[in-house]
Length: 306
Image (cartoon, rainbow, N blue to C red):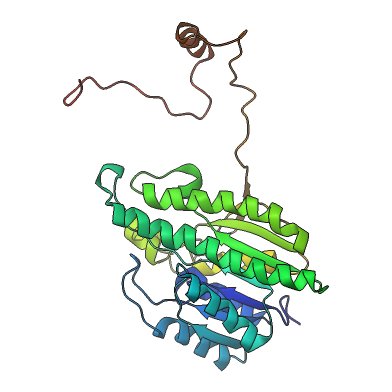
C-alpha cells in the first residue's frame, strides 16, 4: 500500500522540475494526480499542453492514475477548471501543491511594473486563488458533515524568507506565500485542513539561470540538488498521518529544516518613559549596537549624493 492511496492531489506547475517529481512520486504512492501546467517559459511567456501530458503519460505507463490540465493558476476561471478537473475525474480533492512559479529577475531600480505584476500574479496570486478554491470545496464538504483531511503545501523560497538581491519581485511574492501559509493554516483548520510551505533547494529551470553548473551533481555521488529529493517530504506533508501545520521548511538534499517565523527580538529592544525623542533614539541605538544578524549600513557620500 502507498502512503497516499486513494487521495486526489493537484500539483500546479507539474510539467517539469520539482513539480514533475512531485507528481511521479505521489502517483507511485497511490494518489490520483492532477498534473497542471500552463507549459510556458520560465518568465511566464507562452503556453503548451505537452509538458503536463508527458508527465501524465509517464504516470499511466507505470500503472498510476493522472489527468492533465493546462489552465493558468493566475486566472480565477482557470482555477475553477483545475479543481473541477479533480472532482469530475476522481470524485474529490484531498491535497494541493502550489508549485507553479516564474522568474523575471532585475535589480530593484530596473524592474518594470509589468515584470513586478506578472511575477506576483503567478507566484502569489496563483497560490491564493488555488488555495481559496480548494478551501471553499473543503468548507462545503465540512458543512455537509463529511470528514475532511485536506492538506495544502505551498512553495515559497529562500529568496522570500532571507532576501536575495536581484529578485525583489520574486522575493516579495514568495514572502507573501510564506505569510499566506500561516494565515491559511489558522483559517482552514476548522474544516480539517493543514497548510504548510517549503523552501526547496533543487536544480530547476528557474535556478539554472542563477547558478548555472554550480548545482550539477557529480557522477557516482549523491546529487543533493536533484529535484526528486524534495518530493518525499512534500508527500509526507500531504499524507493523512502528518499533523504539522502552519510551518515553513527548508527542504533539499538530505535535509529538512524548520524555519522560524517572524518573532520579536528580546535581545534588541528600546524602552523609554513616554514618547521618544530623536536625540534619545540616536543615543539608544548607538548604545544598543547593530542587531545580531542585521545589516550594517554606511552612508555613501560619493557620486550622486546630495
